[in-house]
Length: 147
Image 1: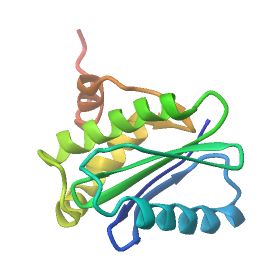
Image 2: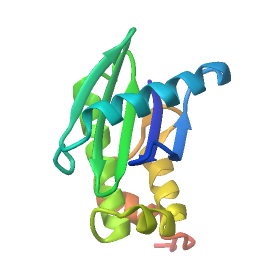
Image 3: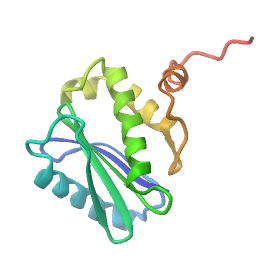
Image 4: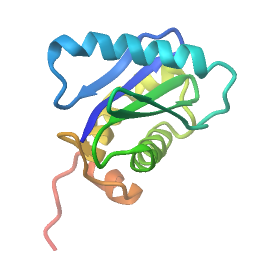
């Protein structure tokens, strides 16, 4: 299961968060843990360079996209390799929505469409769609056309 997907700015402020199966009382711990992990390891790293960590029985993959940091936490079948595929799908969708690796301002301007992408890619803790064209089609917000 994918336990958490978080986007944060370079100062550690959470921009988007999605938790799946994580009790409310543990979410603050995860937020602060992930932001601290990123602040220690993402300084000076290349854009979209993947970093991997583990904490207790979960795997964590995180990276930067432009000025935004992305963290994904998974357990069981979502090990580091599976999370790398998820992070690739999400970064690809974000760059597609923004037109380039986003600045924080551009990310917030496109917030609604990024949330739609995120919900199409990860649904209830499971990887739903990885296909870029399918995600783009699903977030158009137009009614389906009868064939």
